[in-house]
Image (cartoon, rainbow, N blue to C red):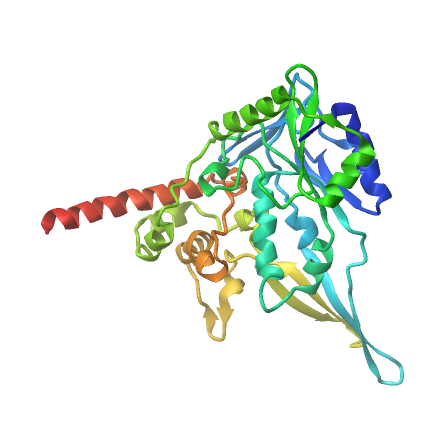
Length: 377
């Protein structure tokens, strides 16, 4: 363990840029915390926090000068690894009639992600399994993910919509990072640094740090323990796959569909959702064409459209598909839950639908029915 002084954040970002990384980190944009390219440590959201609740998000000031004293904004690292819109290839018919195709390649430099929360670190790991951990590899994702340098930041305060402790994805990063920081504000502004890779050690050596004292390690442990006890939400995960499988006709699906707008906000802000469409377009002259990949959502009628119409025509069917896939069938497909407990879907839902509440209601009635069956027996 090492200790990095607050003033060393600028040299850290400079060291990453010297190594050819495009530095992406948190900054304030359009009234929210957003992960965007950083040219200077001055762009970090110093003294800013966020207040989140179901359907509510706002920024507020802190009086302690914390650099990472917020939870999460609407976007995630998915926006950079799996961008909302991507041109896959372009075709052109030359004057001689020959058709030529040009495949679009990601030409950006390797990324350095600064400020990755443990829940988002888990989300990146999940998308790795989806896009590059199976028989079929997504070339664009692989090129963006390759050589990415990750500076994780352990959470000090849980938001009102956070439930990462329930999903075993936080609030402290376990692995998958090059450097992990815990911001300490007691007795001076500093960061406890955990090194997770050789290149992380090399970068830290270039920046400069000092050995951690026992009080630093104890303070960081206390920060994580306090954060874990502050979770604004809780999701009971024991047997949740089987719970949802046997409750596909639960009346709660009808109730939630009366509130759900099918806007797709939850899928857009989710750091693991990966549904997308492939669209082809040709110009009016018929000489140029382009294939574009765009984010899609299982809340759209066209997403499940096959010959004859949409498979999931009702809001009930679409919400059930999203929640059941996220918490149940994802386990069958990829070996883990598709939820990391970041709480974005709760915060950014216009009508404040809460996935933890919906699961709890279904579980409660399922238990009542089970008790009733046992009593009859």
